[in-house]
Image (cartoon, rainbow, N blue to C red; front, side, top):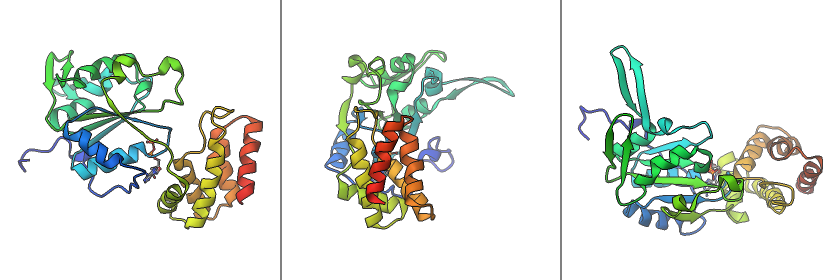
Length: 271
Ligand code: ADP
């Protein structure tokens, strides 16, 4: 890029390698999909590494990554942009999706089903051969930069069926399935991220694995890798293991007294 022209995606570039431990051949499969700029769904439970994976891939492909956490208040304008008042009147400001489409970033829509329906309408023409983004309010049709790719994440176990991804949307994407890594790998990840010893990390992972057995038997989700990292960080700081687990896992996961005591039992078995 010409040095005189500021790079609109400069703030989205990932300079240092994000730590990511692959669980299978997902790195090679992503690279292959990216060669064709194929839209991708990353499926899997919360906190299992989907975001970290896409950060790692964006870094390794040398592409800027525009991440948007979707929620029910998010509108299409939050994605594509809007006219805003400034000193000279009103001026159009590209939204984060438009920036990625125009300038060749990877756009990652985290928890896409949380966003309102009108956002789905916006992404459809980007996910087929047209690769266009209509900016209705501006009267512009943006053709996607050759390096642009759309990636979305989706947690199939968590959403109510009302929030399932519509078939007309999901069939536009190729999908990679994620899950919590096996025990040894997960302990390695927790040890690295929380900067704790492997043995402590392995105990935390053992608690998580028991909790995951309770999924759909009273818990929506078991303890995630992210929660284990939080617990590890508190323990490293000197908080007792039981208090750390209580705070980051038990209280965070459930309000139900029976479920809480089941989780406390798993913690007591390790600490
Ligand atoms: P998700 O996007 O699936 O909700 P994240 O990518 O935010 O989950 O993962 C939560 C945390 O767990 C990350 O910040 C990272 O510290 C850690 N993590 C999970 N899986 C991995 C992995 N395979 N390699 C490295 N770190 C991981």
